[in-house]
Amino acid sequence: MKLAILSRAPQSYSTQRLRSAAQQRGHTVKVLNTLRFAIDLAGPEPDLHFRGRPLSVYDAILPRIGNSITYFGTAVVRQFEQMDVYTPNTANGIVNARDKLRATQILSRHNIAMPATAFVRNRADVRPAIEQVGGAPVVIKLLEGTQGIGVILAPDAKVAEAIIETLHSTKQNVLIQQFIAESRGRDIRALVVGDRVVAAMRRSAVGDEFRSNVHRGGSVEPVELTPEYERAAVRSAQIMGLKIAGVDMLEGNDGPLVMEVNSSPGLQGIEAATKLDVAGAIIDYISNEVAFPDIDIRQRLAVSTGYGVAELVVHSGADLVGKTLGESGLLERDITVLTLNRGTTVIPNPRARQVLQPEDRLLCFGKTEEMRSLNPTRRRARVRKLPKKVEEAS
Ligand SMILES: Nc1ncnc2c1ncn2[C@@H]1O[C@H](COP(=O)(O)OP(=O)(O)O)[C@@H](O)[C@H]1O
Ligand SMILES: [Mg+2]
Image (cartoon, rainbow, N blue to C red; front, side, top):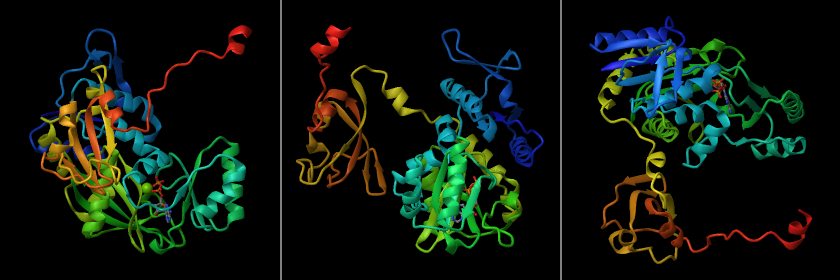
C-alpha cells in the first residue's frame, strides 16, 4: 500500500517508528507535514494539493494531528475521507476525542463508566456542581489540555470555586470532576488498534503528584488487562470513531473509569514499557483495512430526499414487543433495520426472526415520514401565520 503519515514531527519517536514499520513491511510511506496541504474545493471532485502541487494517489493516511492544529488538521483528514482514502481515525472522531467534555458526553450515552463530571458556566452553579460530583476534593480540567497540563486537584470547595472563577474570568471552560482517590496517582493506558488492545501499561505518578502522565515524570510498567478493562477500552475507542487510540482509565473500586481517549497516542512510553511492536501492529491493521474504508453512513444515506436515518425505541407495552422483526411491518413500510441495540450489546443486521424486547433501540434507514409515524407523540409542526399585531407593526 501507499501510506501517508500526516505529522508535523517527522523526527519524533512515534513518526520514525511508524515509518520504519511500514517500510519493513514493504509499503511505500511518506511523512507529510499536515500544515502544507491545500484543500481544493474547486472543480467537480474533492482534491488536495501538497506543497503547491496536486497530491499523488494514496491508499491510506495515518493522521497524527497535534492539539494546536486540530481545526486545520481535521479539515485535511475530512478531505481525504471525501476522496475515499482510508483513514483509521476519522475527522469527526479526532474532533470529538480532543474535547474532554464532548468525549464525555458521547461516551456517557453508551454506558461507559467515567468519573462523575459536571460542566457549568454561571458562578452560582459552581458550588452545586461540586456537590453533584461528590464534593471536594475535586479535579478541575481545561477542556483541551494534554500531558497533564490544565488538570488541577482542588483540596476543598472554596479553593475549587476560586480556581474555577479565575479560569472563567479568562474565558476558559473547565470540567469539574470527581477525584478518584482509590486510583492513588495511577492510571492505565490501553492502546487500541481495531477491535483489540495491542498493548497496555500502568503509569504511576511520582511523589505527591496525582497526575500520572509520562510528561509529569510518571513511571511506566506493562500490565495484563482483565477482559473488563479491555472491553471498556475497545468500546470507548469504537464509540468515538477511532480505530487507533490510547484510552486512559482510572482503576476505580467498581472497575475501569474512562478518562479520555487520545486519537494520536504516543508510542515511546508504551513500546518501552511493553517491549511490543505497537507501530507494526498499527501498520498491519491499516494494510488489512485499506480495502474497506469506513464511510460516514449519515452523510451517505441522507442524500435521498425524504429518506434518513433514525432510531426507533421499542417502548414497553408497545405493539412491537414480542413480535419478530419480520412480523413488525417495518419492511413493508420501506424501513430497513441496520442494527438492534439491547442494553450494551449491539446486533448488527438483525434477522427477521429476531424477537423484539422492551427498550430495544433500532437504528433504521427509511422514509422519514414512515419512521415519524411510528413515533406517535411527535407531530409535524405547521408554520403558522404571524400574529396580527406583529404584522401591523412591520
Ligand atoms: N478524576 C480523576 N481522579 C484522579 N486522578 C485523575 C482524575 N483525572 C485525571 N487524573 C490524573 O491526571 C492525569 C491527567 O488527566 P487527563 O484527563 O488524562 O488529562 P491529559 O489530557 O492532560 O492527560 C491522569 O492521567 C490521571 O493520572
Ligand atoms: Mg491523559
